Image 1: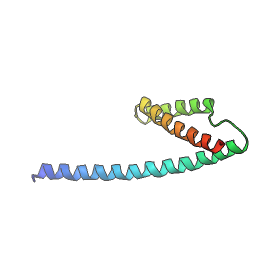
Image 2: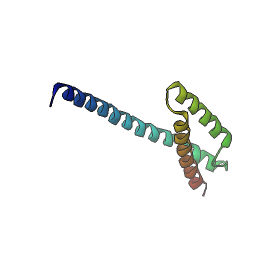
Image 3: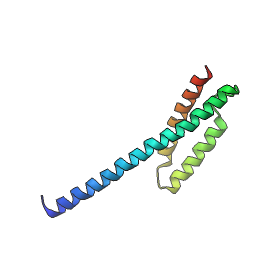
Image 4: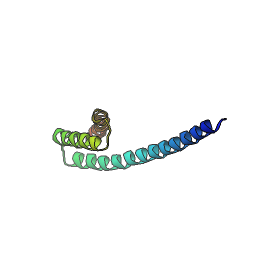
Length: 98
């Protein structure tokens, strides 16, 4: 393997190590987030509150879009991601209501 190819392989390995580390951070962060949303769901079920809060959800989507812009991340992607997470949270909350 030539010297430039070896440097490229080393850089690729470094990038992949960073990606793997960040993936782990994302998974553990999502797990922590869902622990809190489960607690919220239990509170809502105990107090007969609706499983979704459209006002809060809209605020969170707007907030995440702003953060995405600041982070140079596509706000549309961030919105889709949060919508997916919110739909999972609502599904969990609905299960707790039964």
